[in-house]
Length: 410
Image (cartoon, rainbow, N blue to C red; front, side):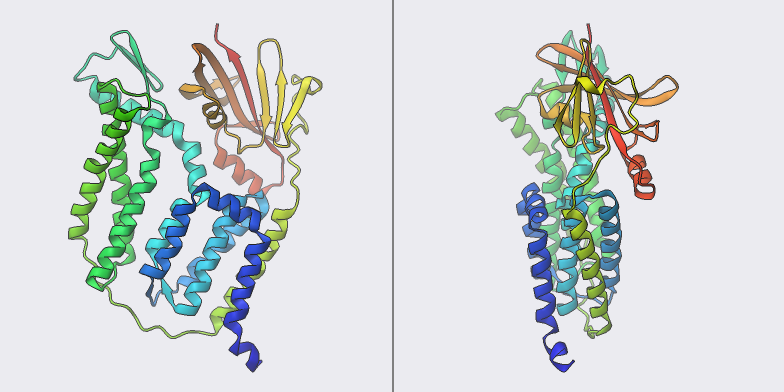
């Protein structure tokens, strides 16, 4: 037992390494999404970590248990990757009693979970911003009408695509904010409170929305929605004026006041690490297993599966003379898939068809207009919320599919 206690640090590190080796493919997938951001977040733990009397281990254990439960039930690799990163943070905290809430926010920010959230919300965010831009600009210039993300001005159509959103600047803004907070702490040799860090992060998010708002206005006024030098210059200028400069001013008034605490190490926390490790081993084994999606089980007979083909194990395609039908796993949101293949989403809204709420989209590509109807389906019922169907799947082990019907508008 004495030998075990003397070498406990090395055993935990070996366990962490083995856990990473077992999850090698998931780590590669996670780091490929944003390698620089994740590495920077880890470095922040070493640069900006400070001793704290807060029971951070309980916070991390709670997050890990929640993430691993969802990962196990839904076979979600992105959440499992995030849990692996939090477990590494837990190990670092247990042996140093140092922790950085700024770094934790960065890890959450650059995780694939955050990226997936933006992918699913891009269209809704874009349309909401465009509607607000229309309300303002219509008071100064003559706008014929707005359809989704299309502005019709003097007979000409100006489309706001995803590139005009500046979503990449969102992460960049929070990254700069994290750097400013860390540098200020080192300069003052004091530390920000959790409340100050969260407040500053919220302010950065608000500034990013304002920056994107004025970016879209400027791009419309200059009729410069295609990617070129002027387009990127406008985006960078708005980012500096409406986000970076206000952050520099804000950090001058947000002064750190906390001093580093002397913290006594506890042997009881090693039991928590072991518990978290065992939970992650079980989930890692589950991640290795093949998942049966049951996409065609109890499918409506109007879909002739004999005419369909498997694109891959998550997508089944049926082509008819007037429709293209996809039956997929819920993670394959049509707006993301269509945008990725060159289509422009011009309108997206919920409609009621046959007394059920579903999504309706208008798209265009190569001067051809399309309409697309899609919904999530579980146990014969239709849903429009990804979160709702995932909660259903989390509680009840029922197959869930996404059905997408697309046709040309004549």
